[in-house]
Length: 371
Image (cartoon, rainbow, N blue to C red; front, side, top):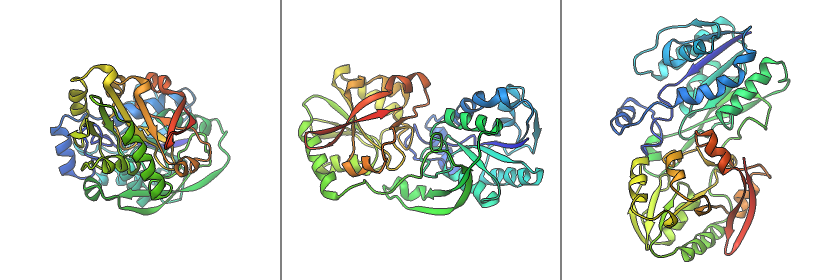
């Protein structure tokens, strides 16, 4: 079997440094200046280790170096180099790789990246052959990605074993990152790609809005505001649901970042991972609280748009002090699916798994499974 394999090495680098993505050369430069490090290769490796054992008869086609070939060769997989990419990879490199994969007649394209990567590949491949995306970006609204890197690997393994029999199309969606950084979500549909029809491993497209009526969200925010205690640092995660809380407090919080509040005052806005660590280190462990919400339609609580909340940051907060809030309507949109923790640290994801209470309104909670 012929398989195309590609890693976007810069995907996801803007997450921990609060840049909301890495589209564009200027953003990548800023991310590097802020100390961002590549993560896509590590995410891709989580997937490859799940299918490598059954890929011995496959021939992979990949750009050299960090765009894929080095990882495949480290697992002893037969790899044909497509080309040597530029030092700092660009969308043109991704599109060129996709074109060459089509020319080689591959039967599956596997790629690690974010919505921008999916958009570039879609512009070349469209619906002509199946793809599986390994989530490695910041936002990942598109439905062509697996829920986690490990899930991507398990699904590809099933594909190699001939267990994938049904396919469907999924939307490729990307947003304007410049508008995104100004707290404006402006999404656009760029096309469709063919994916395995597998709801166990593949994620759904993100649904827009906070889910539910404005009144529901406002009542939830009012309850949370009344529950806040003196002397406690509250980290308030990204999303329209959590933004209602800072609005209720009369604070100019960020829609798409992580803010810190203590005693009704904003003490940190749109914080990076390093900024969060610095603020948390100033108080006792039991006075650190994190308030986050659920990604609509997908169910992620970590790993989508809030990579500032790194494994190191999460471990600084007692598990019982991590509060998930969501309107009843947003929870209903999940149709009973589990919430997902995709922190990039498998051990931590397992620690976070199990059943947790989700605050849905004034003195109202519902139990939800985290997997």
